Structure formats: C-alpha cells, structure tokens
Length: 111
Image (cartoon, rainbow, N blue to C red):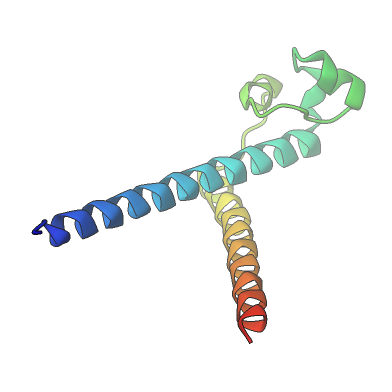
C-alpha cells in the first residue's frame, strides 16, 4: 500500500495549528473582557448600564464595553493594550503551568 504520508502529516499539523490559534484568540477575548469589566467596575459604569444585573450587583456582569463608552470615561489605547497584554500573559502562564503539571503526573504514572 502506498499513501501520501507527507500530505497527511501536513494536514494534521495544520489542524493542530488552527486549534492552537483558536485557543489563543479565545484567550485574547477573555483577557479583553476581563480588562473591560475591571475598568467598568473601577469607573462605576454599572450606573449607566442597561443590564439590570449590573445595577443589582453594582458591578459589571457583562462583557459589553458600551457601558464604558456611555460613561464618558476613556482609557488610553496604549494603557488598555498594556493591561490586556498583562492579563493575556497571566492566562498563558496558567496554561503552561497546568500543562507542566499534567506532564509531571503522566511521568509519575509511567513509572
């Protein structure tokens, strides 16, 4: 039997890379939402938020940055980017630590 092993390997590698990129994008969105909620809480945007949950909780319960815009406050883009980068780095560090722990457990179980 003959088959195109290189093609199959390339396809598997591309699928793995696409899955990684999807995870990275989701992590970036999570970091952006977290920074937005924290900024909203700091500024007190729940007062102008249309979500009742935010009014009741007296904090941001959503991920919509429109409340921050409605409040009239702005965060400079470079500051916002720095904050998002920091949160994203924390998420990636946590993923790395979890993966290292999994590897240690797998190694211990292999013995």
